[in-house]
Amino acid sequence: NKIDDLDEEEQERMFELVDTYQEAGYRVIMTSATLGKGVADVKALLAGKVTLVSGHSGVGKSTLINSIDPELDLHTLEISGSSEKGVHTTTNAEMFELNLSSKEPTFIIDTPGIKGFGLVDLEPSHIGDQFPEMFKRKGGCRFNDCLHKEEPGCAIRKAVEEGGIAESRYRSYIDMVNGMDEESPYRLD
Image 1 (cartoon, rainbow, N blue to C red):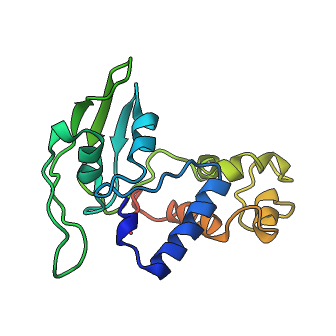
Image 2: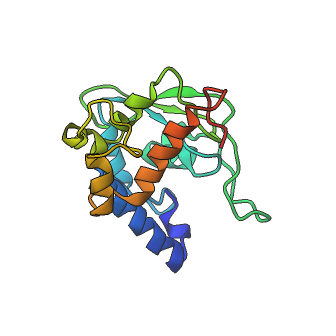
């Protein structure tokens, strides 16, 4: 959301991220809730489903929901003049039925902003399965229990070296696996 707020350099970075996630197999919809850009695509994606919207504080989750169904009129605030960022307004998760012209009921859950996430009850050997581009290649690894770190014959590391998997995605994976070695089961950064 908020693609209308990006300067040229930020737009360039956004397009790099979009390419990275699309190549990994994710659908990416760029929106500007205030200008209505991409909102029709989001509506079509939500129709007949229950969807939870999450993200950092001030990224425009509630504003986006309001642009999807203005009748909800969720509380939002203007961009902060001092930080030039969105302002945290949602204080608890709440589910709303959307007024869409869908045959099936459509619900959306607006959530407060998040600062991070935790990996709970997930074994390090299963973290790679959460990355579609890694999951589809893991069968090519020499060892079934490959953690894609330093093992010989690793198809994942080979794909990173050859550009088939984005280096940034691989680094995120490694950070998660290494974070599982810490005392707390939650990531705090």
